[in-house]
Length: 195
Image 1 (cartoon, rainbow, N blue to C red):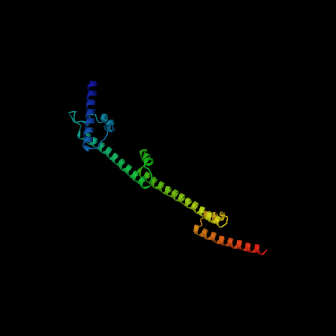
Image 2: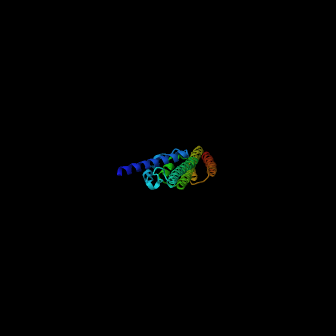
Image 3: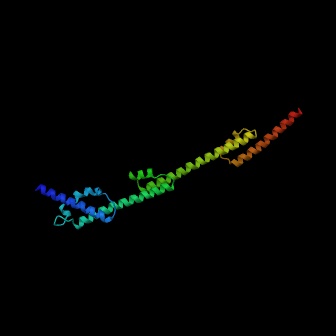
């Protein structure tokens, strides 16, 4: 008796699997049947079938359709989220792998998109600071060369640039100092000749 009941249950489970396959096929989507394997036994109860114990009940069929639809909805939402993450990362000039990995581990889409935006702000600020430092370094080099050519110590002008003064104002100070230096040198030469 037990064997017969088990065989009937197995037939019903096979019918449930076939019903899932039919519903999946009707969607036109490629869905792995194994995603629903936990339901084969659960829905193989006699109460899930019509009186003939061969055809699934209307309610059971609706449950199966709903489960497949839910799975497809999850997939579409996931794919949509991956597209949003990839687009946001590309717009920020980042690769999406880190953010997709966070999403796969359960992070919310909104949190990931905010993280991308925050990372973009940080990266922009770092790039701007690096550009500022490179510009300052170039200006220091130029001012140092000019100061040395005029016979002046460049440290004063480097400190002025590092303190935030514009290169134009530092250049004007340097030119003024150079004129004063030349004037003093000329006066020293005249004094030397007169002695």
